[in-house]
Image (tube, rainbow, N blue to C red; front, side, top):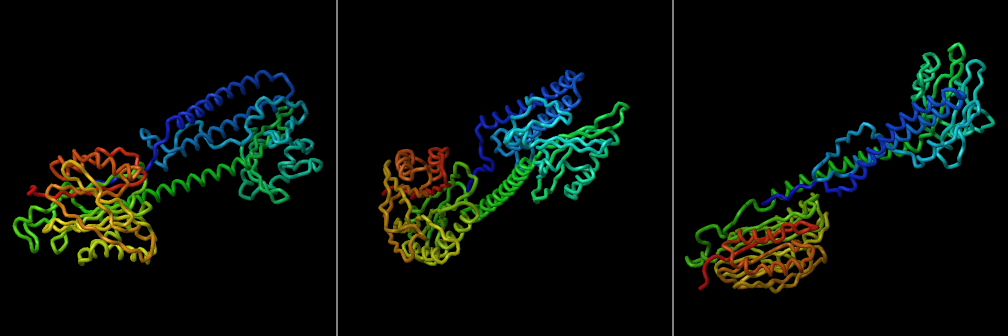
Amino acid sequence: MPSPRSADHPAVSPPQRDTVDALISQTQRLRGGLDAVRRDTVADLSGTDDAQVRWQRALCELAVHQLDDLGRHLGELREGLPAAPSETVEPSETVDHPEAVDHPEPEADATAGAPARSEAAGHAPTGRGSLLSRVGSAEWNLLTDEVTWSDELCRIFGRDPGDGGLTLDELPSWVFSEDQPILTAMVTDCLVDGKPIDGEFRVVREDEVVRTVHMAGEPVLDTDSSTASMWAVLRDVSELRRSERAVRESRDTLRHQRRIARTERRLAVEVQEAVLPPWRGSLRLPARDGFPGAGPAADGAALDLAAHYLPSESSAQIGGDWYDALELPDGQTLLSVGGLTGHGVTATCGMAMLLGAVRGMAVAGIEPGTLMGRLNQLLAVSSQPALVGAVCGQYDPRTRTLVWAQAGHPAPLLFRGGTGRPLRSPDGVLLGATAGAAYTQSEERLEPGDLLVLHTGRLARDTEGATERLLALAPRLTAAHGAQECVRTVAEAFGDEPRENDACVLIARVTGARA
C-alpha cells in the first residue's frame, strides 16, 4: 500500500514572508541610521545646556530601545510563520537576524521627535496615553542629597508627585529581592566607575502592583571631574514584557502541539500500514488453482484485484479509510471499503477495530447484511463513538455472484462492454447513526471481464461528481489489461484532486473470457 505523502508544514503564501522580511530590513536600516543621529546630536549640542543634552541623548536611547523591541517583535513573527515548501523551518529552530529582537509597545511612534525640556533635571514632557506618559526621569545629587523625580516617574511608581522621589537608599526596598543585585551593580558602576546605566528591574508599588522598569542613565560630573550626581531615564516596560512572555508561552505551546501532531501522525501511519492489506500490485483471489466445490472451469471466474490509497490535500493527519480483499475459508472473496469520520490515531485505531470485526465475521460465515447490523451494534457500545460509511461484499467464484450490503456509502460501480453503472443499493444508513438499524443486501451476477470499482466516496470534494467522473472513464477501464492498470488510470484522474479527506479505491476484475 502506498504511504500517504508527508506534509508536516503547510505552505504559506510568499507575500506574507516577504512582507515580514522587508519590515525587518527596514528596521535594521532605521537602527543603523539612528546611531548616526545619536552621534550628530551629541556633537551639535555640545555647547548647549547639559540638561538639554542629556534629555536629547535620552530620547535617542529611547528610540534605540523602541527599534530593538520592534526588531524582536518582527523576528518572533517571522519565526512563528510556517515555512514555505522551499525553506522549511523546523519549529525548534530560530531565525537568525542580528537586529531582530522581541516586540514593540503598542504606542511606539510618539517620541523620537519630541521637543527637549530645558528644566534643570531635564524632565520628560507629559502626554496622557502617549509613550512619554510611561517614561520619567530622575536625578540624585550626591553633594546635597537632593532627589528630583519627574511627575511621570512618580506615577510609574504609584507615588503622589507631591511626596517626591525615592533616595538611592530607599529605592532597593521597592525592588524585587532577586533584582536588587542588578540595581546595586548598576548604581555602583555609575557612581564609582562612571559607567552608563542600562538595565531592568521589577518594583512593587505600595498598592502591590508590580511594574517592570528599564533604567538608562549616566553620571553627572562636577568641575573637578568627580561624580556630582546621577541622572537617569526610567521607562515602564511592564506591558511589553508581559506580551513577550505571552508570545514565548504561545510559541512553546505551538511547538509542543506540533511535536504531538507529528507523533500522532507517525503512529496513525504505522497503524494504517499494519492493518491494511500488505499486497502491492495485483492480487488473484482465490489464490489456489481450485476452490472447494468448484469444477475445473470455475477457476476462470476468480478475481484480479488491485487497490490504491489517495491521501488528502494536506495529509497533516491520516484518516480512517480502508480497503480490503480476503479469501474466505469456503472459497469466496471478501471485498470491503469504508471510512470513519475524523482523523489521526483515534480514527485509524477505530478503523483497525472495524476491519478486524469485518474479517472475523466474514470468516465465520456471516453474510454482508447481517454483518453490517452487527457492526452497527459494535459501534453502539464503543467508547469512541463514530460514524462510518462502508460497503461489504462477498463474491462466489463458483456462481460469479456478488452479494453485498452498504451503510450510507456509494454503491460499487460495474463496468461492462465499455460502459459503467452503479449497482442498485440495498437499504442501510451510516454505521453508528441509529441503534438497531436494519441492513438488507443485494445480489449481482457478474460475467467474465466485468470490472467492479469500490471507492470511499472521497476521491473528489463532491461524491456525486466523483462517481460521474469514474463512469466517464468506462472506455479506458474496460479496455485495460488488468486491475492494476485500472488503478493507475483512476490514480492519474484523481491524484491531484484537492481532497479534504483521504480516499481509497479497490478494483476487482472477473477473470476469464466471455462464453
